[in-house]
Amino acid sequence: MIRIPDNLKGCFWDIDAESTDLEECRDFAVARLFTKGGREGISFALKTFTDEEIKHAARVRRDLNPIVANWLSSY
Image (cartoon, rainbow, N blue to C red; front, side, top):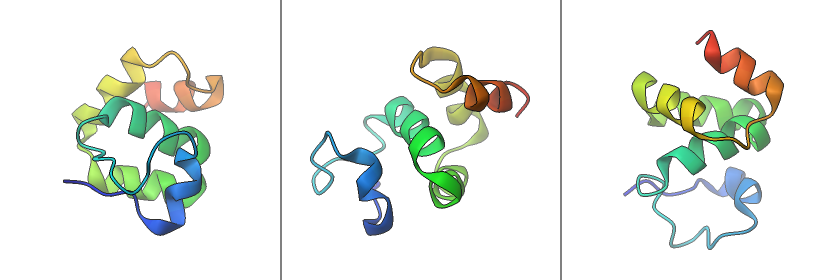
């Protein structure tokens, strides 16, 4: 089970951050961390998820900021 760190709970204002398993909502978590998490969120995502999981999230999520999507397309 992957828990949301305390310093990143603000990125997940619309869900129950205490009981959410980021493994179960991986694509959502990656998109939210990259768009709302700043350096800390991106660093956490890169350490927590594999390159393939991040690439998959970039392909399927439509709520990515265009700048983030562009950066992830070259990742």
